[in-house]
Length: 270
Image 1 (tube, rainbow, N blue to C red):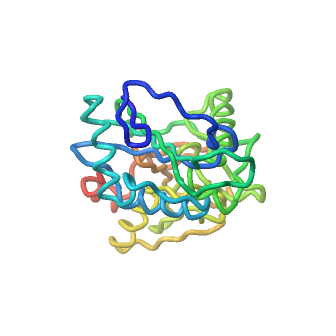
Image 2 (cartoon, rainbow, N blue to C red):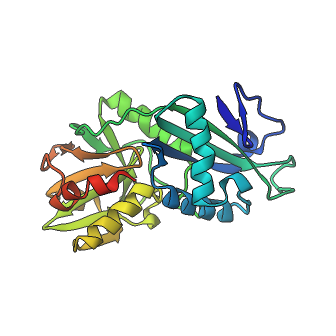
């Protein structure tokens, strides 16, 4: 089952013309539904609002608030009989035209598959050699630059890595292939600033809140690879999981999550 413009259908035929397919005129969200709740719904909705504003779109009524968003997507998870679901919500501008849009109305499609959590450690990571992040007014959201992550994943697979790390064109660390990147040094937490071109991840935002609430000094900035390679511990974080990184290139790190994060794991489910 899928949700196409809030209609629950056994199969979807996308209306044409489709500006999402033709111009990438839209964005997407990846969400997790577990224990009858949509994980981090307020953070997802806030990012959706920002993305819609950046693209001059209006969110549809079925996705208008965090509460409505959760209720809408719960229908899909239940219809697919998935107590734990990984959801993809694709949004695009309605209407035709070429580069100049004719409306701010948004059409959307939600799909669901079983969610299988994977928080296993990442044994082998390295920096990408063939692609780099591209800061832009839309790089904070998912969609306009998805080709970048496809290229990065291809390189990761070809090089036999468990994870790949992206930098911007100037060599500043940006993010992992499908997650935010964090590291600890002398008890402080570091993560790339959005100016690096990284996605404004919902788990990234929550983890920073958790760290600050625990009294951990947090730094968001433009950091060279050397800063990460000198870290005490490194880990990735996205809505699906938080994963320890044991090695980047030849540098090795602590195999454990930092204490503030271990203690807060139960509270971080949502």
